[in-house]
Length: 144
Image 1 (cartoon, one colour):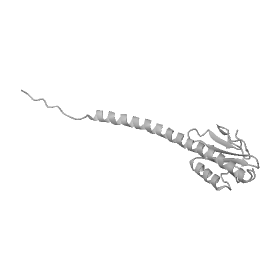
Image 2 (cartoon, rainbow, N blue to C red):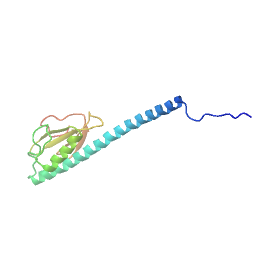
Image 3 (cartoon, rainbow, N blue to C red):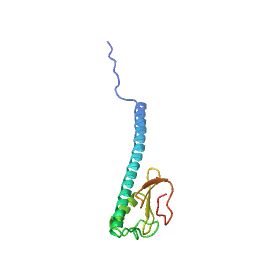
């Protein structure tokens, strides 16, 4: 009786196919993770913009119902209020922030979103938050 010896293991082609499949799956997962990360960052930006709106109202209450000098200059991200400055600094680390302007009775701030850089989230003195593609111009104090 003859004993047949079977070779155990994988062929080179089988190993290459497995490596290729793993590579394809990894690229799909990385693409999904990148999108999820950007959505998370956008959520953080929107949350901080909501906080900014609340802090601006507190500033106005403490300053005779005036937003005057709330932001220093047009298209800058500086404020004389420490809490607002901290929020703007946090947002600016994530994305571009545009302070359109502030006057005695009005103000507006806009930040670019990460998932779709053509979109901006804008908050203003009317206590609304809008997302759109229009960029505020210097001196604008109302979200488009």
